Image 1 (tube, rainbow, N blue to C red):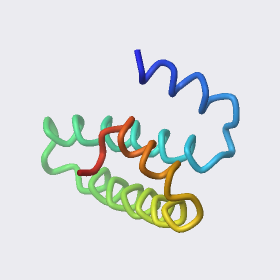
Image 2: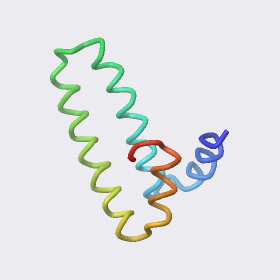
Image 3: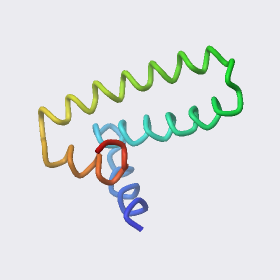
Image 4: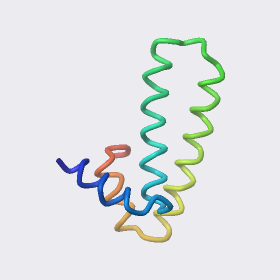
Length: 81
């Protein structure tokens, strides 16, 4: 329920930091499940590391700009402690 509401709110503004982090998180989850089956797919591993770095930079930016939105986003996406 919460994730569907999050998707509808975030998808209205596709250029927002929240949408980009949401999209990176979906790609990361998809690549992680792919790599569980294909352990020696090194190009996908490299792509995963690049996306992780981009998401990390976006999260750092968001935490510096707006701490409240950052906390809400990581809580809704369930990506950190």
